[in-house]
Each structure stands twice: as structure tokens, then as C-alpha cells.
Image 1: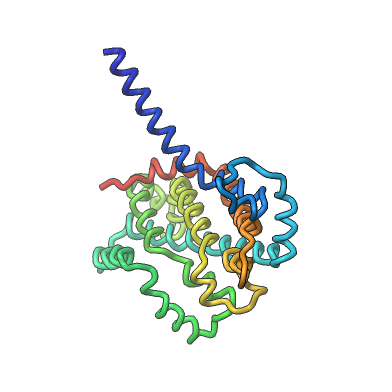
Image 2 (image 1 turned 60 degrees about the vertical axis):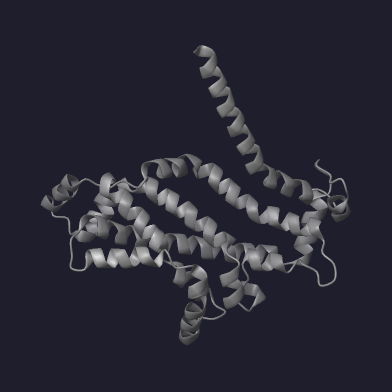
Length: 276
């Protein structure tokens, strides 16, 4: 019996180890390519060890594109979008979870249906809409359409049902809290794990977005990182070392963000499991 448990445990750890290696290898390969030259990357068999060209490649990236401006643009758009998503989604999710109003179930069902529609189908209508508003080639086009999300509202609503007891809201009403104060002072502190997960999830999505900024932004001074990195592709030849270095430079902030908030992120995932 003891040997069977040991073998099962050993097999489980082995499978997990293989999964971790498979998951980490693409990032390891990215770092390897960023520290070598293009000739090293293209040779056969491929070089799997770190090189000594990282700083040279970084200098070439900075000389080829306006990396710092694109970094600021991406950071600005991502931060403002996250703030808007956390506010509007938490407010809407709290309302769906704790209040009764006419058409509530119908509205929530319509919200869920929008999650089943591929985002690519909304590109043309969204672009035509922002064109009518005169937002093309402006930060408004990058920020305003993403200030709320169906997933964010659904996530907060599911979390709020268990995290915010009705008795706590009743106590707040007896203390004279109006609806917004119930949200801000009573519900919001209990939603921190869910908000942390949603904030990181949204930040990563906006940071990595390529297609929407490519379609809506024309001025290089407003390019985001993903669009700016695409400028590293040559017309006749491609320097893969520079491209991989630029990709690594754009990825590092996300890794640092996840390391800082990893505990809160995992807590939000664990506590925010869908419960009915």
C-alpha cells in the first residue's frame, strides 16, 4: 500500500515537472535568442545556451524604434483601462449580485451572450463607431471601448454573491449608507481578491493587444509596444535577435507585475471560483 502511494505521488510529481518544463521552455528560448545573434539562432542544430549579445541587441532595439515612447503609451493605456474596468465592472457586478430591479435576469443573460460572440466580429462596428466620434488615432480609441467587459462584470458578480453577506449590507443601511456608499465602503473591501485578479488579467490583455491599436492608431508617436515591435520586421531580411530582444523587453514588466501580485492573483482565482 505504501509503495503504491509512493509510486502514485512520484508519477504525479513527474507529470507536473514535465508540464512545468513545457510551460517555461518558450520563455527560456526567448531569453536564449535575445542573448545571441541571428546567425546563432538560425544555425543547426540550434544553440540552446545563453550568449553574450544581450546589451548589443538592446542598443540595436533602442536605435531602431522609439521604445520608450511606445512603453509609456502602453503603460498609460493599460493603467487607465484597468482603473476603468475595476470601477465599472465592480459596480455593475455588485448591482447584479445584491439588488433586484426590473429586467435584471434578462440583462444578465444578454451580458452572458455577448461573451459567446468572437471579439473579431465587433471590430468593424467598433471602428465605425469611434470613427463617427472622431476618436481614430487618439488615446480615446484605445481606452474608452475597453473600460468595461462582460467577463469582468460576470466575474465580480459571481464573487460578490458569497463575499458580501446580505446581513452586512443591511447593517450598512441601518447606519445610513446610501447605495453608492454600500458599494464603496462595504462591498469593495471584500472584493479585493477578485479585483486583483481582474486587474492583472485586464492589464495583461491590454498590454499584449496588437490588432486593435494597429487598426485605430496611425501616428507613430501613439503606437503601443506591440505595434512598435512590429516595425522591427525588415522588408527584405529579418534580424530575429533584435525582434526577440524587443519582445523580451516588452514581456519583462508583465513578469515583474505577476511576481509582485502572484499571491493575490492566486487567491483571487481560488476564492472567485463560480458558485451557485
